[in-house]
Image (tube, rainbow, N blue to C red; front, side, top):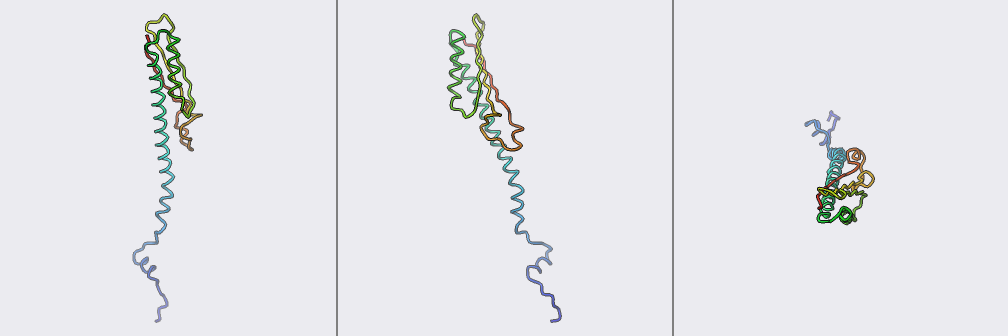
Length: 149
């Protein structure tokens, strides 16, 4: 045999098809995509928790305002609404402030107004992730008003 070139079967296949070994391509693609996927997943979870907290605060304000219905004066209406807010949000992991006001007597109509502010920036339900904190709200505010007399 005068020809000293011996070609291995794998090299012969490569020469014939022009393809190289792609055994690690899936791992590299996965490594590139997993970061983006996790960021999108975190964004969905964070957005869902913000919406759930907003709904909870809105329901608490509405129920607190409704609890003042039937009270005879503004002091009793404020006390009933304040107690109801504290009862509804007492087990919360976050921090909230409530402002309950009523129209002083004589009033026509007599209104009680409940405003709840949830401090999301300092007490988030979901821990902030890098880059996501820029799109989350600082505060979640909800307000309800009813005629109590």
